[in-house]
Image 1 (spheres, rainbow, N blue to C red):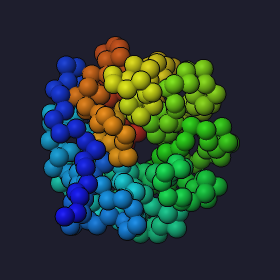
Image 2: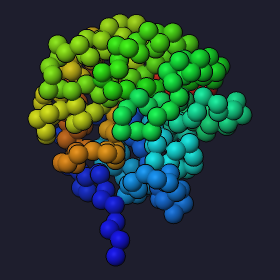
Image 3: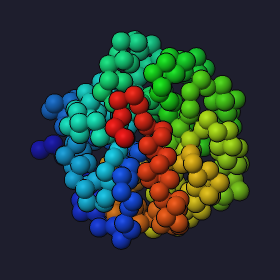
Length: 293
């Protein structure tokens, strides 16, 4: 008998104590499969299915109304699983694509019509190597024609060397998961200082997601909170938040998404900060010509 993949998401997340503002967004989550309809890339470990229905149930449970589904590398450049989830929400959700810089204008226009608003590129050792940062920056003017942005998933140690390239982007740049900093190294670490310096350029945005990944102390991830709080305090108009559900490639213990929501009260302590982080900022960043108000 073949062992089935173990889900990386919590089977019964807690109900958050924090009441989110009306219109709150989860700007970073994924859908996986179902692989019978949307096959995974060959040659990689197959994750357990985390289909759109489970994502929608989670959002209803934690108080999320809008969301951005970031296409997962387990599906490669085949975006059908993400497209299917966006179609099911009738325009209420947005998408971030994975695509090579050689993607055709026709394909980009098709994705734009479906609600995609940007392309993500990985610079992480555990993920497949893709286009060079030089080629990505050369590709950015094509994104500008659609009003899209770049999303960069980067190891913290690469921020300094990539900074000069990223500053030449023709479109806004969103840095995933606080630049994947290591909370154990403290807020004075060079990688975080480089991230702060990058954020002082108002073309850059950051997702204050991934406290659970940055933490070296484990739940409730208190050692990672100062990084997210510092970003929200200094850059209140260019921070967004996401669950990262279903937490792919996550080491145990599995994050409780309800507890991650409650952590927002520490990341953004005031109602005004939470309104910007969860509603106003994502609405600005992910709005497109076809976006509802």
